[in-house]
Length: 292
Image (tube, rainbow, N blue to C red; front, side):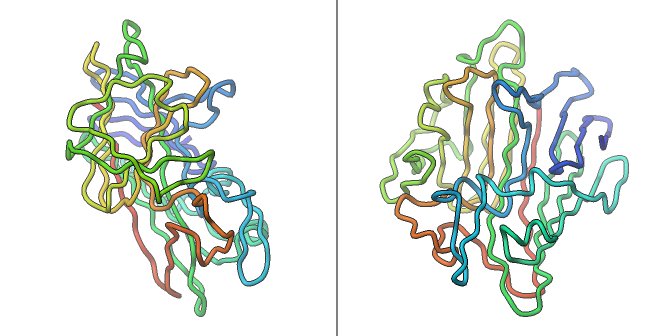
């Protein structure tokens, strides 16, 4: 397990999937990150790559060939190499190999940088296309789960979700596991939303953020502890808790991609929300986690 530490935070990261394992503030020793439970949700903070969400029939077509790929891609279940590490920063890397090429016919380099900066954990995904001829087509996203509530005297139904800017947002509704972006509904986030398990009956709440600066905050009002997730550049932002399971868990998810549309034709070149990275080029995606 990789440990990062400064005077404010102590963070642990696993090399399997480059997944966050623990986030604690040094002044209160509260564990903010969900610790995983196979009966409810076994993961903690998976990295979503090269797809966000589910593909129709778990498959897609590219250059006349059909490839099979499960929800959220393969990066979360594969080992990352440590490229560089200090007390407060680590760089982890995953690249293509024979196994990934069977389900995703592209060369890639995915680097994940975790860095402590005061009371924030800054996360940066760097995607590089090493190919000299072909574009890299992919999506990427984060899926950190947080313990909610954060006090023994509180309940899940007291937890509040607030966003900044506090305004009305277009919300994409899921039809099964697929997005119905042609028929969005509005969600009023001018005031904090008190959550409950039924809120996630139809899966995640998906906010259309349009790439603007956006912060989602979970707060346990009993002890006023919580977490801010700050983003810039995401087109979509998901908030999710397993249903019908009743886990004390809420995921706050910056996405640079989205599940297949209800009308998707299965062709990768037509898939909604995908990025196209030119040969020898790279791109970065950033967010930060600030526990309080």
